[in-house]
Length: 276
Image (cartoon, rainbow, N blue to C red; front, side):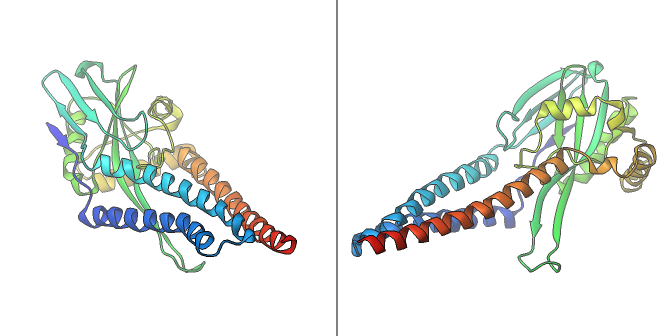
């Protein structure tokens, strides 16, 4: 039994290329515009605009850093195999330190945990409250020994393959568990491999998963059992929620910093113009 990760859907591959060209092109233009203005119209009060050149240069660096792992990942696809005695896999991830090659005997597997991972989150550019977020999920399987965990991220188009792996471990009498918590988000770096491993080892974070042959119903049953056991509020406490809270603070302070920066820029330009 084996699983080979797919390429990203064509739409998103094209979207990434176009997005990279547009965003990097815009930041290059943003950095170059003050230089062009100062060169064509050398006035002292335009000097503060050089700060925008620095900001644009930093933007180019950030966008290149953002898109490079995406294009790298399209050339590197994870693959996993179960032999008669071992499970082997090579995992490639966007996040630093997450790519790994693993191999361990089947008889060292202590448990297998199934949980939802976030593929991507999109948000329509419309005013609140019309704006709606769409979160695309996919199943992730953590094959755990005492020391490590092999994490297999299944493409949403490969649910049949995912079910084959679940069925294999179920028939092999490996304990199956489930958690509704979203512990991984592709490219967002909301948690490390070790953090997920430590969390999934804790009995209070997982619930036994019973496979009956219908994954949709089985997952709904597991979610209900998890909430019944631990409470609905517990399902809202986790790595994803902590990341979201952190991002809200980052956005808030970014907005404040932007307003302050614009105010200082305009103020300095007027001050220099008044003094010259």
